Image (cartoon, rainbow, N blue to C red; front, side):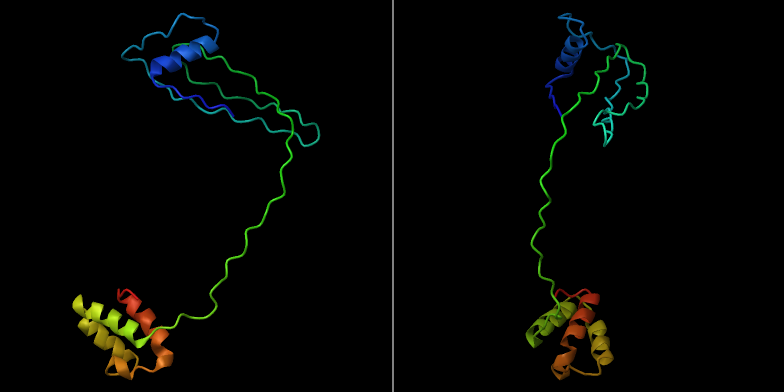
Length: 155
């Protein structure tokens, strides 16, 4: 693949004219009503697995432009060998539910109360069958933390 970068449109036109064989004539000035048509990439021709010769594909005609466009035939490339893919080391997957402390649950509950959601917090405590957070059984800390997150708490 060859990438070419131009600083100005005039530089690009000058290069295109030289490439098309128009010599050193320089770029033609753009007229005010001349449509600018963006370049479209030319797809690479597929290679037959048995012959390694490019398979000819029809190329769609480019839209009419002020200057004729000359196409360049595809360059046949030698087959390349690729290295076998290397697998990335596996990332350990967390299999146990995270554990939460009473302090973490309390901090999240206080943030909810500070944001005006005290009634929602009291309803949540009632759903877990407790009147206050210290009465929540330790085995329900994870579920309670998830429910707090559902109300918008950061935990």
